[in-house]
Image (cartoon, rainbow, N blue to C red; front, side, top):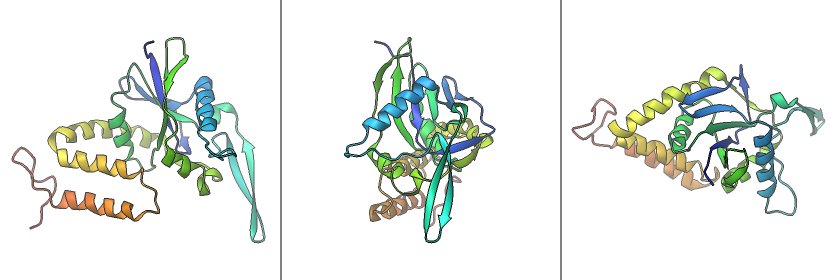
Length: 228
């Protein structure tokens, strides 16, 4: 069965100021998930648990307020109307072959976009394929502060910059391959748990690759100053 369209779920718990649906590039939209998509996302969340008790995910459907009682605190959740739920996605049609560059572009936003499951639909809107929630993001979003804090705020004007960043990254891919490679390596490091020393080593390796790079004749030597 042919894929008609699909979504890439943004697991980041965020509230978008002055939200509106936005076309990043042709066929790729930043928007909130519709009712059917939310159902499928929540089903994947439930199925992602390998523990005998359910994961506690970020409160995508509510706001949180904390009642402090001496050294302890109580968390209270107030449900939001469905139109204010915070399940954001990138939708695409007919293929997702440009998603990797959009994901790289999102690294340049003031708020990190963590991409979770990918869900594919046929013309009738039925699910015909999906990828599960990434293990490193399950750990990130079901433990610690993410499961009990209010959403981070991002402005719609920042989201719109995805278009500019996408085109800049595509220019970089051909003109400055080493910068593009560094960005991809940085993206890969996001899969490393934050408490591992390997993460620091990875960051330094990326910085070193940019500083010590020797530009080829086809590259603009003003892109990165090389110190000898």
